[in-house]
Image (cartoon, rainbow, N blue to C red):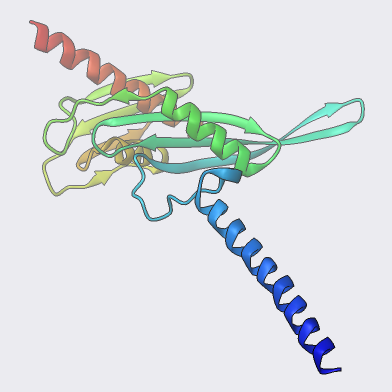
Length: 193
């Protein structure tokens, strides 16, 4: 009886040991790149992403309504680079992820003069009209939501912005981006001459 108990204990401990080894092995594999586990939580991000708008969109199909999500995301490094992505997907998380990737692909370089923009300008995109002006240091960004998000992501700390046209967030974001592109072209032209 005693010998059988010792054998049972030895067998059970061997099973437990192999189970513990399995847990340790799985944990080690999670640490590596297997299984797409992301272990970059503590590292600072290269770009800062801001979700401006998420819309639920539906399409009538033969089988019923097809529901998807659209995400508008502004991506920037706060040092003069900014991009905008607008993507659709079946889930919100996928739409945001696709928008971030699209924004990183379409980055522009924004000319900065200290903490503000070099010149004031008006820009029109679709039904949106944007007015951007430089401001003295310490003013901060005095602008509405979509314009503020783009300027902050670009690294502009002092500026005045006004949306004069539509209230559509996507149009305002694209108009602001177009205005910053125009600024870059003006600075490039002035530097050449």
